[in-house]
Image (tube, rainbow, N blue to C red):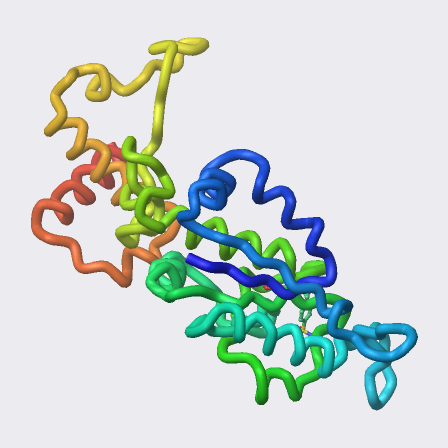
Length: 245
Ligand SMILES: Nc1nonc1C(=O)N[C@H]1C[C@@H]1c1ccc(S(N)(=O)=O)cc1
């Protein structure tokens, strides 16, 4: 998948080529990243990319022309890609959104700065507006990297043969189960016996029950969206009763 990011701070994206899933995906061609700086498309002696807002008020607004030109260049280089603007006013993203995005041919991500962008861009150049959460950051670069990370891990081959993203939290509407590794005991805290049993059926049921129970405890809003089969309902009831015993 091709990602084109429009950003005033392209050097921030070097972090993606460091190590880990995203770096390996970029290095192996599973994903590719192209950066476009609006300042390269700014005209005039001062090559301005922002200016004061009409009507007064604090902060600066990113100018229409440089962003429109950068978006046009990215669209020409990535046919079929849609343009998504990262802002607190966008649709809040969740795992299902990332799953949907992973099937697109590519994305052009616009990382905003300052107070935001000239509103006319939303009507003329931008296809979708997304938010990574209800808070305001100093720039859209981190949100763009968050989206890239969440989408890239879903691409075939990105996580390697040893596992896939399907066990992750939120991938099946539930939170993930707890995980343990060596040693078997730390300060009297033991690994659940079932995980040491070698009974893969029992381990799978325990993990499903833990995922159901954790979601019930921490995110009942997610559970409310799910339809549990009879076995899952019984697992959850047993979890709840064990807690109340
Ligand atoms: N949350 C987020 N999810 O994605 N981006 C997020 C974010 O905080 N971006 C901030 C730098 C930039 C920004 C953009 C737009 C607006 S504005 N005036 O439209 O509200 C305010 C701040």
